[in-house]
Image (cartoon, rainbow, N blue to C red; front, side, top):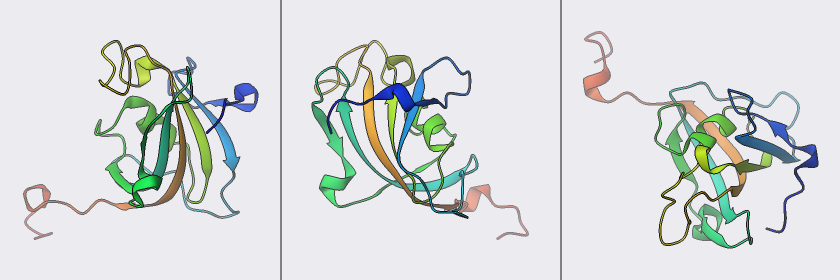
Length: 142
């Protein structure tokens, strides 16, 4: 991934403070599902790079294994919870995530330094209602 042109980026942060900028690379097809509601399981591909120099630090694409997480539950960095909440299935985008929406002052050593702005090339592959664990079910659901 090369330098990101954020001139066409949309601020998708909930507080509209520029913490999460989305640049659409490939829009979702007409009628695509989305965006995913809080509490749903999201399946996505991503490649993460440092905005400062383009160094790749992680990629589900390279592993050939999509990443799954429950949106809006704090399982991932805030920038992902807010960025993926703006996407539709099939959409490819770059999420430019400021450090306070990413890994903050401490970073995620050794690959992500403190206060790092991150670029994630992401694709929303799908989402579905998360299957409840037995302890989350009502007696009727069991």
